[in-house]
Amino acid sequence: MAPESTDLVALVGATGAIGKSVAAALRQQARPYRVIGRSRTALEKTFGGDPLAEVAVWDPDNEQSIREALRGVAAAVYMVGVPYTDFHLHPILMGRVIDAAIAEKVDRLLLIGTLYVFGRPQSSRVTENHPKEPHTLKGRKRKEQEDLVLAAHGTGKIRTTVLRLPDFYGSGLERSLLSDLFVAVKQNRKAKLIGPIDRPHEFVFVPDVGPVVTRLLDTPATFGRAWNLGGVGVTTQLELAQLAYGGRPRYMVAGKTMLRLLGLFDPFLREFVEMHYLLTDPLIVDDSALQQLLGTISKTSYGEGVRQSLAAVG
Image (cartoon, rainbow, N blue to C red; front, top):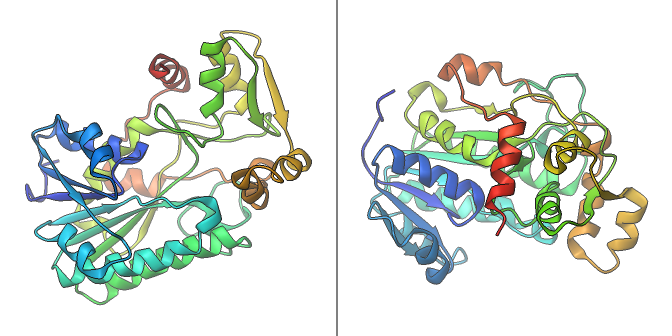
């Protein structure tokens, strides 16, 4: 599919794993892009060697700074993360970016979203039409964020969409269900996992996300709604641990009770407790609508994804 525009694409919150994946997809197409973040040092360390990339430092608390960062871009991909303790900031930051994007006449905005917005699963497969009834603070704040993005499309001043992802894995992730697994294998020790680890789950391999994002940006029918992207299939953390260890895995599992205890000392784990339902009552995505829109979507097998994740561990 030919790019809708060769104009500049802004990656807002570019230094995370998904930002790097989208940048790689744009680079593959020889498309110019702007990376936006708080730290020039971090941005230049990651993207400074790419002649297609330009660096913009912003202050997301300053309206003028946001506008300057977005000035002259045709499309923006929003991937700004906040600590689990600060999820109340998601809709606030999103609102500022939407206002700035409209003021700077940005044509298209894509939000990288999450399955948190659905709440507990009410069907075996979760389509885009699944009820959005989040019962957690994090789910509610993510839903507020999504609602702002899609409402902006209705104004006719900007085209917007949301791409929802399940848990993802790959290199460069410090806080994910599987991040310690790959490090543990390389260090020849037991992996620290959050259980139960034998329940059905799905994961998206980070490098698979970027090409989907660029195709969505270039497809006019994308905009005005949200889309789900699923993993290559249903698996379990246990199965992935077996792949990583090449046989019998070595691990320690923390359940919900242990998370509460560990949360006394670790704010992230304390905040994760309310999201533990995703492990006991997993949301398995149906992304047939996305496949109907885009055609075949390339998804890396779990075996190959685990191999690459292990190879990336320093």
